[in-house]
Length: 152
Image 1 (tube, rainbow, N blue to C red):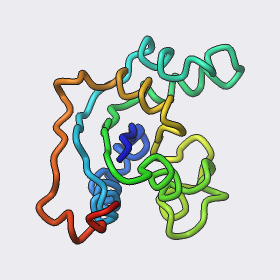
Image 2: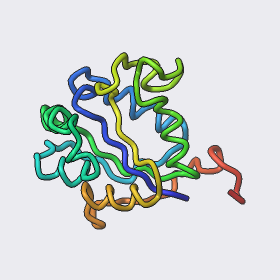
Image 3: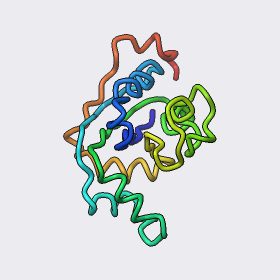
């Protein structure tokens, strides 16, 4: 089992796609173990996107991510980091395959609806930015046998 961070970004919230996107993760059999809506501050944006702060596109990125509330989720599942990123599709909605979240709902590079951690290291770092350990509520769904074999 792995855990990853998923952010439903301002464009997702503004377009009222929160339920649609959450439904896709749940239908896949992934476990949402924490979720909250929050306003990203400039300070949190700088921490989250630390590797991009010095890049020329960063001011626009910060303006976007702080423009409206987001929904942050901690999601558990088998190979969840890879699975979620494949569900999202290519970063640019213009290049994302149909059937992926971005392929179905985005037609922009920046307005691409969702962020997901890209590695275990990133997930560990990013989850700590958005959730205290006490906010995580891991559980085993009663239907777990319908989602995976007992030896997985």
